[in-house]
Amino acid sequence: MEKQTNPLHGMTLEKIINALVDNYGWDELGARININCFNYDPSVKSCLIFLRKLEHEWARIKVENLYIDMIS
Image (cartoon, rainbow, N blue to C red; front, top):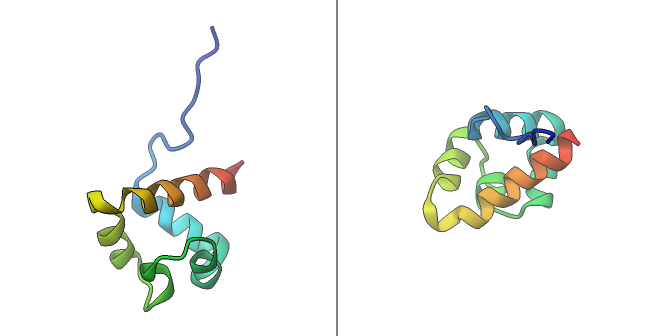
């Protein structure tokens, strides 16, 4: 049986956000995922605070999926 690998294994949310910003920039990131922490005075710190809240799990899933798409 072939072992399945998780592309998020070993990746912190901070590393994911930094990789997305490096690849897309804040403007493109905000266009792809329309959340305030990407569109209004963006910073990694504000994104981490927003995305770590349980009620914003939907946004974190979108961010993780965009990262997976980016590395594929």
